[in-house]
Image (cartoon, rainbow, N blue to C red):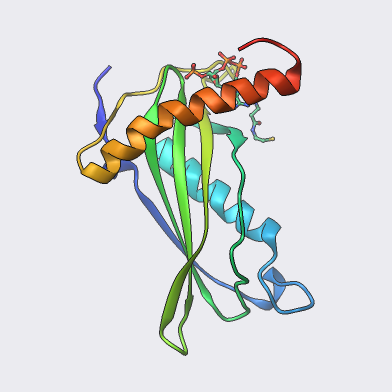
Length: 161
Ligand SMILES: CC(C)(COP(=O)(O)OP(=O)(O)OC[C@H]1O[C@@H](n2cnc3c(N)ncnc32)[C@H](O)[C@@H]1OP(=O)(O)O)[C@@H](O)C(=O)NCCC(=O)NCCS
């Protein structure tokens, strides 16, 4: 199967935090942000594979600082590596305060997606071609993260990896 450059899958999603996205403190709801992260990552996986993709897992997500009502949220998603049928996507989140011209990274996460056919059967994923030093580093580290993920999954399910 022909490989595709990592950069071709890149997705940048921009959202404005509106009242319906916030809690009583005027902060963006974590669940809303997780929804946006999932959508952006799914689009990157679909762009890479050219197929419908489902979320297989979401690694730990931390929220480093609150995102407030009226802030702009920039969600960037890019494929780091494809394995047999699974694809790892890295998502980074930045919040922009448009009135004070400030911008800061608030979250990052790794998600795993699988492209499926009409019967829900996993399909092979095209290899990822890393082109920059950053992409090569993320590509190498993806193998370690996968190992940890599979071990943790096996431990949770009481099976051996
Ligand atoms: C993800 C899914 C397609 C995997 O199907 P499966 O029949 O278990 O297939 P396999 O066991 O062959 O796994 C396929 C790939 O997914 C990976 N995978 C499966 N579960 C995983 C998990 N929890 N975390 C990370 N990777 C996972 C496997 O390691 C395998 O990767 P590889 O082919 O690159 O080696 C299937 O479990 C599914 O449809 N899940 C529901 C997805 C969904 O609805 N998501 C939305 C949330 S409700």
